[in-house]
Amino acid sequence: MTRQAVYCDHNASTPLLPEARAALLSALDLIGNPSSVHAEGRALRALIDQARADVAALTGARREEVVFTGSATEAITQAIVGGARHFRPDAVVVTAGDHMAVLRAAELTGLPIRTIGLHADGRIDLEDLTRRVTEATKAGETLLVAVHAVNNETGIVQPVEQIEALVGPTPHILFIDAVQALGKLDLGFMSRPADMMAVSAHKIGGPTGVGALLVKSHADAVRLIPGGGQESNRRGGTEPAALIAGFGAAAKAFPERYRAAGVAGLIAGFESALFALAPDAVIFGGGALRIGNVTNFAVPGLKNAVAMMGLDLAGIAVSSGSACSSGKVGVSHVLGAMQVDPALKDSALRVSLGWNSTRADIEALTTGLAGIMARHKSRDHRAA
Image (cartoon, rainbow, N blue to C red):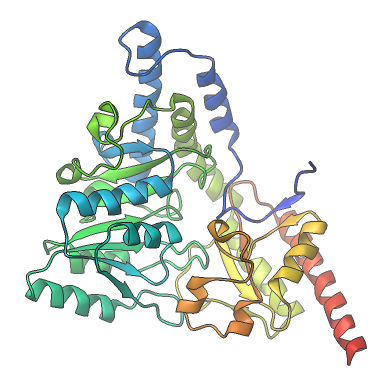
């Protein structure tokens, strides 16, 4: 199968970093079980311990606060479903823009779900959240509040500090989905009021199949998979040492490579070129603070299915939103929560860049999009 020549879908999954690949392959040569006390087991345990230290350093967590999981989705489910079992809250609070992993996990708790809306620019409605938290506190209820630090579809940076200031001093539990923030924002987990936080390896150039849940000590008993006592009794199952080693290597290498790529400048350049091609183009959340590596936009009248197919044929990979909603091109609960017009929502495209993105990628993307728009206008003209 031919590889994509231009990859602009890093928010779905970032290509494997050379450092992560080397660590992964090296670890695959080792044998044994990390829980064994013989030399082979100890060698694997040493790899995991080093990776834990590297992930802790990137997230600003203590080493003992890092719990390796099979994915960010598992970490999210452990935090929400496991958190509901352990803390026994009266309700779960989510936002309308949360990743589907968060929304589905909330459903699995069987508890009442209270959904916080988004403003038209994609920011969490803090007034709505404040009202919900205040009402619950006065009623003597406990909430498990789940929010995302950065929206995976729009790149909008949420007011997490304000949310922490609201929830932190209360008995409520706060979980943060930090998957898209990892390596791009300072997470500083150990010094934050958040109780739990989820991150993923393959969003920072690590391998798929491994994530982590960061937990404060009072949340150590939050479990999903009991197993045989691995991860200090917080996540059962033999640890995938090779994947974890790759995660640790990515955690060390990603920040510098990401900065070196200058993705914010590349996105800004693309948006300028986009408006030159289509002055009526719309950037979703364009007025809000965004992470800098992603733009979610629409060219009115150009369906995303048509644009994605044309770009794919040209060897350019983009998306219409979350990869976890693949097969549902044009459907975005996030844009729906932002009150985007349905016709415009069906034209939404997401371009997301990462550590190996280049100016040549943006030039190819702009050229490809220009060709598609020209053909689209030509067909419309003939039809008229």
